[in-house]
Figure 1 (cartoon, rainbow, N blue to C red):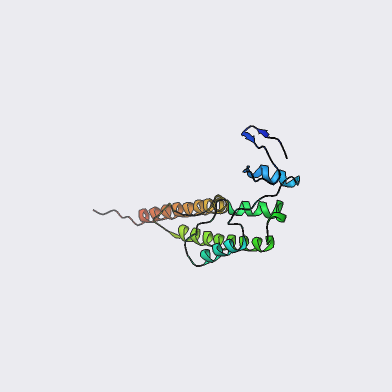
Figure 2: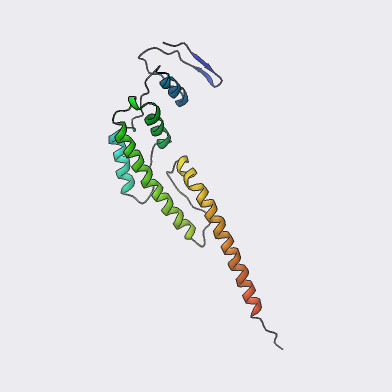
Length: 169
């Protein structure tokens, strides 16, 4: 048992042995590292649910709906609370498989987006913040390169059109 934890963001507790309590993830990890608690995984962080997510992701061209912060939470459990996670090795495999399928879709969607001539924006539903961070840098770099190529093309086009003008009387 622990008394309340007094934090800037507010008090947490009191803690009683064997009684579940909601805490921020960083508190859970800190307590787990000190072997003061076990962390109860979310319902979706099990082999059966992850298998369903992987199958759904494989069977659609669109991004499937996944739990918010699925990659970060799964990583945290595998890294710091492996003992609290039944079938942690299989869970790691399914999470990696889900990430691989989604990152392949991100790369494919990005390539299609960059290949568009008319449009300068895209809508991507059901992607996570980690996936945005994963694709953001390469999209920005590629967009700048395309912009530079378009600018050069237009400069050459306008130069060629002025070279082919003739004076007529």
